[in-house]
Image 1 (cartoon, rainbow, N blue to C red):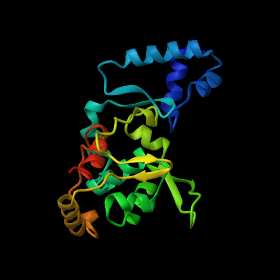
Image 2 (spheres, helix red, strand yellow; image 1 turned 180 degrees about the horizontal axis):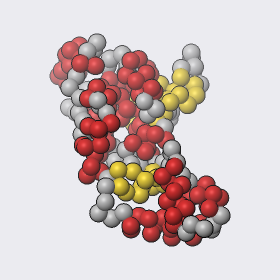
Image 3 (cartoon, rainbow, N blue to C red; image 1 turned 90 degrees about the horizontal axis):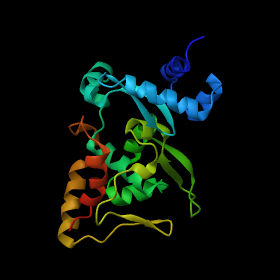
Length: 223
């Protein structure tokens, strides 16, 4: 019979989503302590290789090493699949202020977000989570397990902290800070130039949550 480590490794390779500790324990008929020890062995054996063991979205999975990202993306993804700045900005708002409605996202971005929201849904990064208990009962959105996996997060709590001056959710409502007249005029000009041309923007292949998402909310409210 194969060793516990080999059986756990085989499960991780076959899994199409992060495998939870409980599911692994059930599959290999082992205790949580034994499975955790096997996971540590597997992680240690991958040091210095192009594959890593990651704990993401409430489970474990084998993934490509971050240092190999550019090569893997060139192999798997055509350039058009990279996230545009508009998509990243919208995703950041949903991630930090969820559950959030389209109208709330639009109130912060200042442009129609129907197309961008649909793209994020199609990619499995956001999903409908219910309806808001208000007039019209608009659909509310949140991020998915795939979002956590894509950005290497175990939970939403691991998002980088919001910068000073970013909008917050208070009493269930999104509260943006007031803009100075000069900043409001500048943002209006930017929105006019962007609206209707979001798909034409140059993609940011190396966009990351740490360096882009949190800042997107702050930049929109800077004095």
